[in-house]
Amino acid sequence: DTGVSQDPRHKITKRGQNVTFRCDPISEHNRLYWYRQTLGQGPEFLTYFQNEAQLEKSRLLSDRFSAERPKGSFSTLEIQRTEQGDSAMYLCASSLGQGFGYTFGSGTRLTVV
Amino acid sequence: KNEVEQSPQNLTAQEGEFITINCSYSVGISALHWLQQHPGGGIVSLFMLSSGKKKHGRLIATINIQEKHSSLHITASHPRDSAVYICAPSWGDMRFGAGTRLTVKP
Image 1 (cartoon, helix red, strand yellow):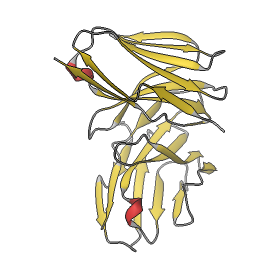
Image 2: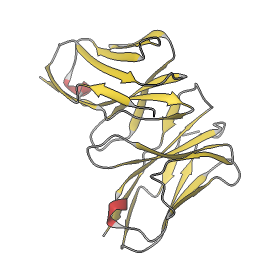
Image 3: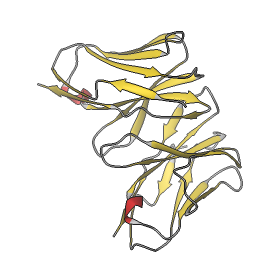
Image 4: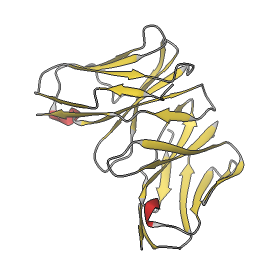
């Protein structure tokens, strides 16, 4: 297992387009988290899953954002009708569960032009 | 509301100095993580602790659950320690402090 994988590494899209990112966690990790990080800021929590169940969503996750983890393995984060303010690094992390360490992916850098 | 405060926000040190970064949080937690992020790089987990103290090489992390406070210490700092250090208390999910940008000059 090579850790948490995120795809793509970089995405440039035009405003108004939809984008989808994928995260493959460490295989035995039950929890999967999505964060967003803008330049010079710390990561902001977006949402997390326990297996396939989405347990919490930040109010940062507007109705243009949706995340899924259909089989409790990989997860996707979709942004519809992208805006320039969506430009950020989108980070995924996974863990065995509450109280266990986290492993982060390298992130997907989104640029909306 | 779960809040995290880190201090200082920015820190410049000379090589060899002892570094301390502080983190305070407002609500009881199950665990606290210290993370490191190099410029343009991914996030690396340094420590996860729920009580006491942990040491890894030149890094030491302590936590006082009653006072809701944690510290990260770096002994004999080196320019390669230059990075952003982030405190992240965990209440089920993990919330991040704003980070401390450390620059160690040779």
